Image 1 (cartoon, helix red, strand yellow):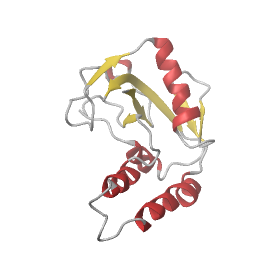
Image 2: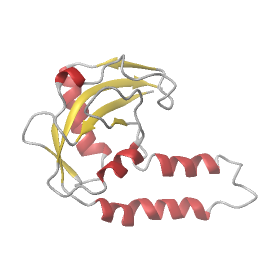
Image 3: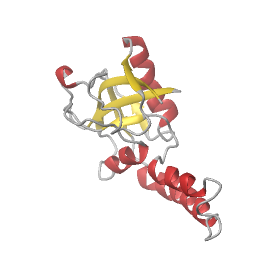
Image 4: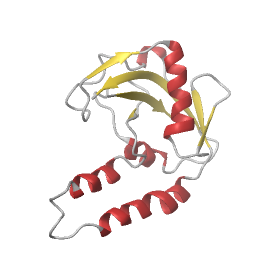
Length: 162
């Protein structure tokens, strides 16, 4: 299957620091078999899909400048209304008899590690020295402390296969 790795930072990302298919080390990023660069049109679609499909509804909007998205706020509300209830629902299904059966533990780990239940991975650096991308919980944690109106800059966008 294919999905997207998106480089995102709270400061502008220099073109020379955009991630490319050589940046991500296979094995450090969960389940990535290989990465490929995408066309400019596919990149634009990936950014639009990030805002309108991957991230919680209304939490972000496309920026007025190219390659930017704007945080509209709502992280605390999303955590309270969406993510914590999901964690609780999954935790309530666990018992000493089933925690290691029927993928119960795997599902719990996935809820904790991939809060948006998305294949999109996030590369959270304005520099391309980091060798791995992270699942959505890392991005949501990264948002903590930012105020509504914060502009985020999109750097490299890659397709990846798992």
